[in-house]
Each structure stands twice: as C-alpha cells, then as structure tokens.
Image 1 (cartoon, helix red, strand yellow):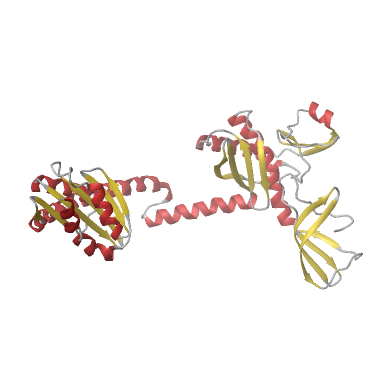
Image 2 (cartoon, one colour; image 1 turned 90 degrees about the vertical axis):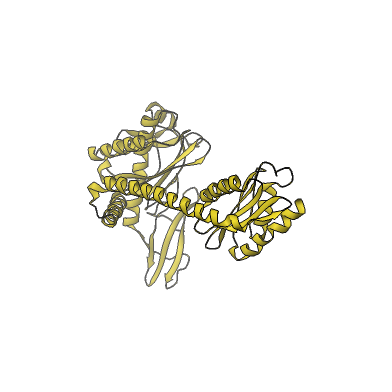
Amino acid sequence: MLDTTPFYAESGGQAGDEGELISGSAKFAVSDTLKIKADVYGHHGLLAEGTLNVGDHVQAQVNTAVRAATVRNHSATHLMHKALREVLGAHVQQKGSLVNAERTRFDFAHNAPMTDAQIREVEARVNAEILANAAAQARVMDIESAQKTGAMMLFGEKYGETVRVLDIGSSRELCGGVHVKATGDIGLFKIVAESGVASGVRRVEAVTGQNALAYLQSLESTVQAAASSLKSSPSELQGRIAQVLDQMKSLEKEVAALKGKLASSQGDELMGQAVDINGVKVLAAKLEGADAKTLRETMDKLKDKLKTAVIVLAAVDGSKVQLAAGVTADTIGKVKAGELVSFVAAQVGGKGGGKADMAMAGGTDASQLPAALASVQGWVSAKL
C-alpha cells in the first residue's frame, strides 16, 4: 500500500492497473490493483528484485500500454451500451461488466438472442461515434444535478452525494473509471461474441484498437486458408462452398444407393443362414459396411422374404456396434424385438430398445459381437 498512487484500482467492472513499483535496486511487479477500503488501494503482485520495507519511497510506474488498451475498451462499453438501447430498446439495462486490456464483456437485460443485423447495427453506431472523434468530458457534481443532466444511472448501484458525470460521444453516464480523451482514440470496435448467460440476460463481448485489428486479420487469414484449401479466392469462397456441399450431397446419395445394393445382396445370401426353431426362422448376422438406415431396410426385406421370423442384424464401425432386431407380426406374441435387442446390446457394452416388431441399439465393444450373435438362437428358443 502507498500513501498516494497513480494506479487505478478495480472498480465498476474496469480491471485494476498493472505496472511496477521501484525503489533503488528493489522492483515490485504489480499485476493488479484493488480497493481495500475508501481511498486505500492494494497493489498486488510479486517482489521481483531486492527488498521493500514499510516507509520506503518508491517510483510508481503504470503499464501505459495495458492502461491504454483497457481505457479504449471501457470507453467503447459506454458507447455500446447506448447503441444497444437504441437498437434493441430502452429495456436494455446493464447487469454486469468486465473491462480489461483484452476485451470488454457486457451483460444486459434482453429476452432474445441478437440477430446478425442487430449486431452489425450496434457496431455501425459505435464506429460512427469513433469516427466523429468527439472529445470526452467528465464533470463532478451532486447527485441531484447529475440526475437533471439525464445521465444514465445503473439500476441497483449505490451512489454517494457527489458523482462523476461522463460524456463520451452521445453517451452520458455516471462513471468513476478511466477513459479516452476523445472517441477517436478507441480506433476500431468489433463485437466478437453474443450469448445468453441467464434467463433474460444476454452477454456481448467486443474488442477495440489493436485487438480489433488483430481479430479481423485472424479472420482474414482463416478465410484465405479456407479459400486456398478449396482452390478458390476469398471473394469466390461462398460459391465454392455451395458447390462442394452440392457435390457431397450427390456423393452421399450415391453411397447410400450402393450400400442399399450391397445390403440387399448380403440379405439374399443371409437367408440361407436362417435356422428353423419351432416353425420360426431365426437369423443373427453381421452386415459389412452397413449403417443404421441400411440395417432397417435390409431388416424389412428379410422379414418379407422369411415370412415368420426373428432377426438380429449388426454392423461394426471400429469398436462401435449398431444393432437392429426385427420380429414378424405373427411372432410378436412370443418374442419382442425390444427385449431381444436389449439382450444382445448388453453383451457388447450398450443398450437400446424399441417396438415389439422393430428395435435398435448400439454398443461399444465389437470384440464381443460374435458371441452375442451366437446367443440369439438360445434366447429365442427359450421364448418359443
């Protein structure tokens, strides 16, 4: 703690200053500044060199680069707050904020996600204020006079008899924080995220100055890399992506058709593997290269051909297992597909269920599938 300090202590959502305290060979690296009580600030950090004792005189040096970045974000928050009220409505009220050198995070009352158009409009309004480069003005006055100026006061905030009215661009709020001298000092404003944090509360995150430039350059690099991967230029990327998606859909249809043909041919071969148990054809088999849709389609075809049957079909993808169980209508009085698929799935580390005539399941241990399929005949025989 110092008797007086140029460091700004965390308050009103603005992060505390960083910097150094230097005394002779001693150096204390300040990573944060916090209020301990009224007019008493604690400089938190690490004694990097030498020793410090009570009563020592120190030179306090604020990290001006971090301070400047934080200040840009804080001033932009005021402009954003006003823009949000103009674009979304007067119901917008601040519910919390965090301003540091990296970005500004602003929580506000609103009952729906912001649309892309609304985000762009807020950005346009804030950047218009920045381009106007209006000088900021701070006035200290009594609370009644401040209210008469129309300054925005945060709901639930406790104010003293004397307050600080801050004008930045067209924004007028009560604020004791550090701010730019003119709106143009903010440089550039860009919203980077919008999300919900609670019922009726939205959160906007934004960057300014060099951080905004770095963000846009990063996006540009991403777009250029994507365009290069698709053998396109950034300006033609959207059309190229649409073209690739159309090609993928066409290929997916071709693959689905080929899977259907493969499964159909396998189904014909599998019919010969069905075992007759008390007049019911029982079949448990693995289909190569099948997916859930193919299993269901093949199941329907086998039920039609076998007439009176209980069938279990399986497909494997790595260690994962997909299962389908089917029972013809004349057999569901004795055998339920849902029970059967659950019995098989439990042996391959999974579970599932469904209707009496058709049920699906999944598993995670393909190594146990041969034994699980082999157990189907015994289980069905006991039911029949």
